[in-house]
Image (cartoon, rainbow over all chains, first blue to last red; front, side, top):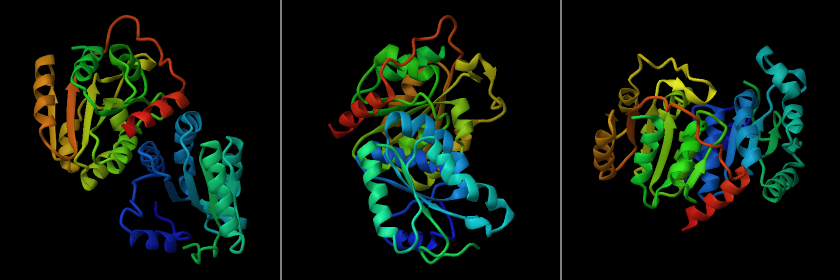
Length: 145
Length: 186
């Protein structure tokens, strides 16, 4: 799914064959990625945190109970309350909502990104559940816009 | 033809297809009429059976994938249709049981009475989209669609199944995943 904070990553993935497919909504992206896992892949869903609400039912009634792992890479709009109004509530509570339902959340700065990615990946594989990597403004070069 | 009879007709035609089955009575009926490791019973996540089937079909192009969906769940996940049309997986067959109600929650009507779902599928780019209203038509349309390639859509007009519902899905969700992934590898 589109997001400015992870725009550079989306651009890079788009250059690879089968690197990136644009879905119409975040819960549908979770469904597609879950199908890819059943096919034997280790999928990743990229999205803006505004899509987390759409995903919650899929995460709770599909991934967590069927043990279908995914890596969720989430652009963190509304980080530290500095953003447009529509991003502030989910920006403040998104990580806590995911943690509350049992999804490991990692929110690294730029220097810690490789280590956090490794930790998210290993949590996802070990527990066979989704893990979330939040991308703050600037970590991948993108800014709120 | 009741919804359960329609499920039985579809099940009688299955060979090595991978089947993703939507939530509610459809899963429960499929388990009763023909349980098999290649059935993925999606007991929650209404609207996402087609998403799951599409992700599977794209990444296992050598396997035939059937999504067994309902009118209510297709309407909930309409966004799946343009993706199936645009990406065009050759191995994707979308079967939609249209009983006009949300059966497993008590038979409340779906808002789709005026909507021609097979026409919608055609507009969104499915390679073929047809309708069947009797057992004979369903068998005939299935056999025709099996010979074609590309995302195909089969709307099956049926009535809500009277009487007691089929029992709940017996396997735990994580066992369904394990069993299905084994079936995918074969």
